[in-house]
Figure 1 (cartoon, rainbow, N blue to C red):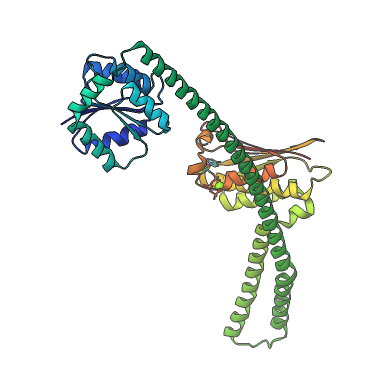
Figure 2: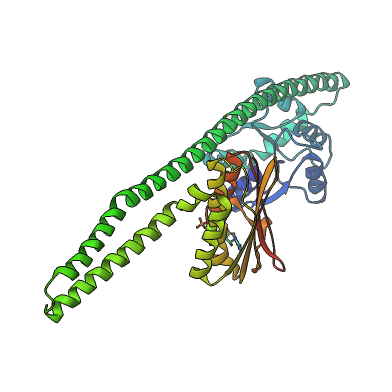
Length: 398
Ligand SMILES: Nc1ncnc2c1ncn2[C@@H]1O[C@H](COP(=O)(O)OP(=O)(O)OP(=O)(O)O)[C@@H](O)[C@H]1O
Ligand SMILES: [Mg+2]
């Protein structure tokens, strides 16, 4: 079967052509530019060459010119296969230089194979034609050189235009991306606001409506216990006791839900008190020792900043239980006239912060913390190492 040399600087094109030809039992050689093609062909001449035009090192026109001027290679049919130079004048030039066929990309595989077959079948004629049309006079050579220069300049102008167009497109895309990023950021901020508002509202309703009812129910139960006849059956007595316990339990449960939704201590006493309260609660629940260092900040921070610090601390501490295997968490809150800084450090096993690939993100916790801090103009830093555990640091202007 015929041996075909394909020359193209585009790896994808090479692979596609190679596969098409190989699947039809052709032997295939490949080269990434004209110079490489010449070297390969001189060592192992093919039966046919298919070459792109625009390539680094040596382009297809020059390759064709060299090919047709080489005693060993000139009889081998030369097919130009290009999408870069699709002008009729490019075809004229290629044929003038000695190319035997000019194919424009893209072309259907069947059509491409048909042309290959055709080239094989007519190789004799083609060779003769090549010999006849070989450029031998100096005048012709000059004319070809002039044409070649013209084509190159035209191509460069085209490339410049393409580049300018691409730069404009990219600028537009960049601006659109920036816009949608800021919209997303605004949306994330708004979502956080809504979440906080809803939590507060729900907690308030539980506090104002369910709480007083439970208290009233409890009082009623006590009154009932006192006014009912002394010799009530054991069954009724135990049902009453059970109901009182249920009311107590439900009240406790509701208090916990309210605290989880929105701790009252944060609104009433501020961030330091809320962190201390949460640390104790967290410690009881998880068995991890929590140390909170920090004085009350005076004057108090705006409520949205306090809330962001508190929620970030919660999220970071949840990560510690889930992943760190730590025995201790230390929270340090420091503030001066200009900035407030909160550090949440654990003594756990740490993790590879640089390995956090946004595409393979397992969760939203860290992204959420960062967004929350940045939405209020703050900084978010996470440091982690196997020896020293993990530190989450948030800093905001007050
Ligand atoms: N304190 C920590 N110690 C060890 N690994 C951590 C710690 N904090 C975070 N990580 C690692 O970082 C990853 C990302 O954490 P992130 O909070 O973003 O997601 P998540 O906790 O898996 O999910 P989500 O927070 O959405 O429920 C975790 O999967 C974990 O591997
Ligand atoms: Mg998390």
